Length: 257
Image (cartoon, rainbow, N blue to C red; front, side, top):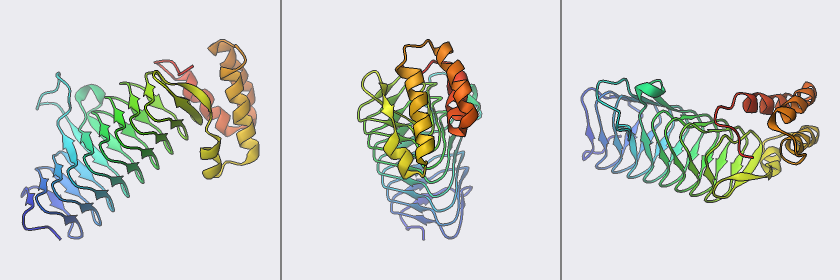
């Protein structure tokens, strides 16, 4: 299952059911679990752990040193990738730094398209889609079921909430609350992600409550404190609204508004 032209370090832990394509290089302290398929000309540098049933396409760079001038080889620096992720051509994912807890983490079932860059200390959840040329700066947190349109850029330390959606070429410099659409440079709210919510099984009552929550935050001319107070009352009737309220309340960068 390992092509004869591939170079695999003697300390790498490769499950017998892993496939590694021509001219790929697997470095020291790399662990790859069963069912994962590595294409040709892929470079994986450790310490990196890759779970089962991932597919990593040609010319990707996985687990390389962080692009951080403060980084040195004495720091703890890891990359963890979960299960069932698709990582397309020319994707680059860097390991973490001590300033970010030492780890970059990719969850499960993510679809990461060509030329995406995921920088040091990013935390990626599950079931998200990053379209071509999406770029995440360091310390970015992406929650579950997020869709980032092609050429989206996310500023360092931003958070993107679950079930949100960015349009093509969006530049995100503040936190994006769950369930909403954003677009533009810099990104501004463009409505509720209704189609995404429907596709993911949200019922009409929940979507209507989230539409009301969106109006409170963005359409009624309230200060953020006033909007949060109204959201608190609305969250009594909706777990999803409570998620939105908790996300906004915990924002350190502020939200797109």
